[in-house]
Amino acid sequence: MAEIISVDSLYIDLIEEDGTTHWIAVAKIADMVETLAARYHPADLAHPAEYGPAMCSASFALELDDAPPPVDGTDHDKIQWLDNLDLDWQVDED
Image (cartoon, rainbow, N blue to C red; front, top):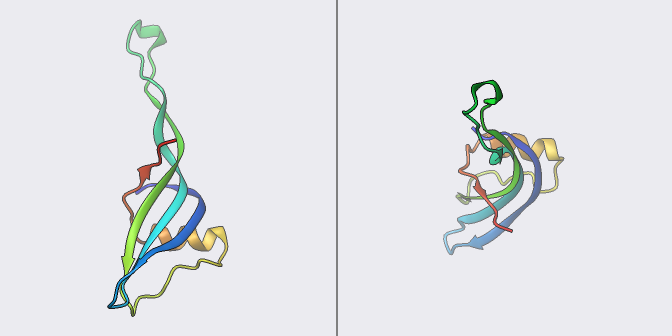
């Protein structure tokens, strides 16, 4: 599961006729982009790749009876709510 550092935005993208809402979350996610490539040779200078945070987006849908996300809540509330969804985060291109 991706570690959410902070939530930038959380908004409705589409509302279907049956009341299903499609949401987009934008957040800073830990360890999403390689910041330093792995080095294997020479052995005394070898190190694994290092990863850093990046702004990412994920989408999800809620049925009419589902509780909406805490849009006006604290960052902590939003992070906890999004963590429960186990979303597939995608790095936003610049």
